[in-house]
View 1 (cartoon, rainbow, N blue to C red):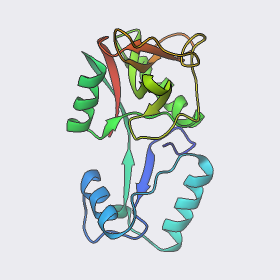
View 2 (tube, one colour; view 1 turned 180 degrees about the vertical axis):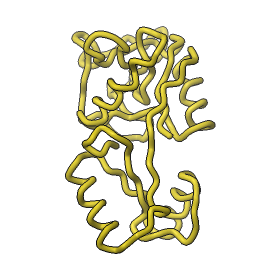
View 3 (cartoon, rainbow, N blue to C red; view 1 turned 30 degrees about the vertical axis):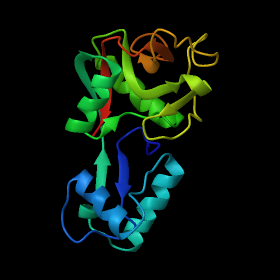
Length: 184
């Protein structure tokens, strides 16, 4: 969900909505009247959407911009997910190198050594998924993380990004208390 310039994600409905709306209302409107909001994940898709908007002279009110926000509270993964969904949109999903770059830019604001992502492991299948339900295609795991079966006997595993160093992803028990990144 990135626009290739490492700036905000642009999401819009396939046709303009009748009034100004917040993101959640726009998503609901688009799902009722169309299919869903459009997610722009790379520079090419961003250019296609900009052309679509310009060709149809759509007003800026039909476009919503999602931003990444580092929340400097130390919460478990489940608490962080609930916080993001109640106060913003969701925990961040990193589905491209462009989004990883955006995460790398904001994670510097964290006060913990790692920061929760919207990444969780289904232990019974040894499969990592994003909170959106999408499979993990783009990966940026630190060595020894994410590629071998997780030990979930004591606790479920969730994904975090290191806030220092090369800012790669690590697998941690969900009870760890970390800062986290929400999309807004």
